[in-house]
Image 1 (cartoon, rainbow, N blue to C red):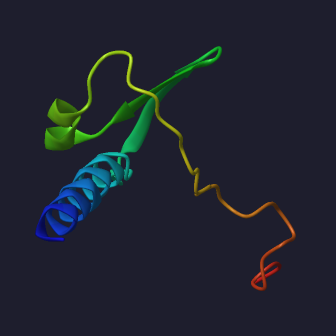
Image 2 (cartoon, rainbow, N blue to C red):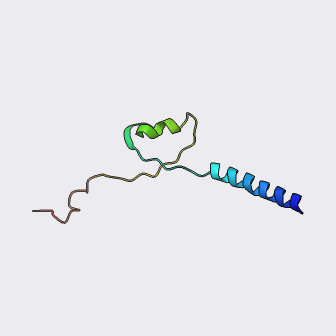
Image 3 (cartoon, one colour):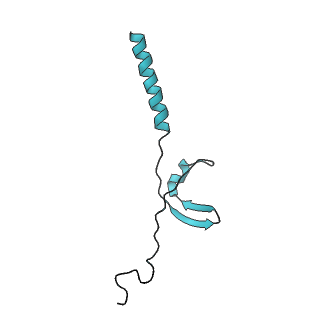
Length: 76
């Protein structure tokens, strides 16, 4: 009985270790250049934690100015 319990605890620890390695880390940066389908992002010190060939995904927050006529202060 104790042997089965030890095996169960070891299996849970192994699965927990693998699943924690798969969790994504969030980094924030600024886009410095866009050329064709290549985007350059400045991350600062966090860039040391990313290796060539790593898979990444991006969520883009637009910070463009409002279009003419879309502002509540138009005409002031």
